[in-house]
Image 1 (cartoon, rainbow, N blue to C red):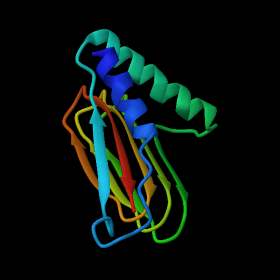
Image 2 (cartoon, one colour):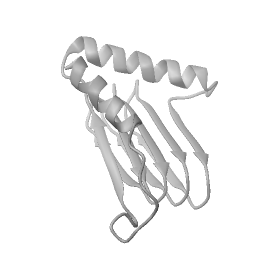
Image 3 (tube, rainbow, N blue to C red):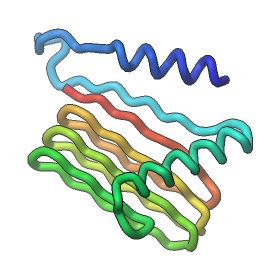
Amino acid sequence: MKRIILSTALALASFTPMAASPSFAGGSVSVEITPSTPDEELGMRVGLGLLAFAMAQNGDANVVQNGNGNGAGIGQQGGDDFGLIVQEGDNNNAVLDQGAGSNSYGVFQFGEGNDAAVAQSGGETGILLQFGW
């Protein structure tokens, strides 16, 4: 599983869209990563927690936006939730709804025109990467 995640990450890192043409106009690519073992889940939760700490943000819901026309919202209905939305680019929208507690999730949007709506029902962990052009 670790090889698959690493291979996917390397493939995404090397992805560079060509100049906008009719076939590429307004496109996007999304990848969601969820852990399949308790060790992977712990690693992802620790990674997300370290990211929030490194960003020097307080609280369990954090939004970081660089660009214009972005919208983000995080709703948390339980205890021990951590949510992060990072938007780099323009006209990105993300909503993260965490219910029942013990959730951890990060939404990372790069480029323009990405849309995300994530709902967690308790005890879930994940990361969503979106690249739009």
